[in-house]
Length: 91
Image (cartoon, rainbow, N blue to C red; front, side, top):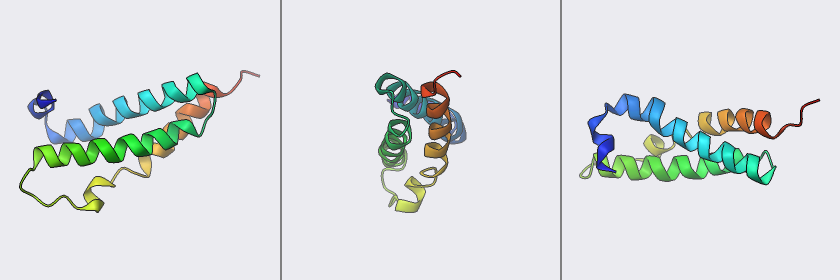
């Protein structure tokens, strides 16, 4: 995953990581048919990937929990909305 280092950290944090995480979570919510799976997986994936990314990008720095959890509220909310759209039955 060294290819992420060729992008600016802003592009990675605002476009690449959220798109990948939310897409996978909504996909699993659609497969299972349960809306809450999307935000739950988004929260888990987001915390794991952000911790991994910051540990890899800044190996000597102490990675604070606040830095890792910055998007832990916004991503699940977006995922909840998209999961609801994906799972909801058309009326």
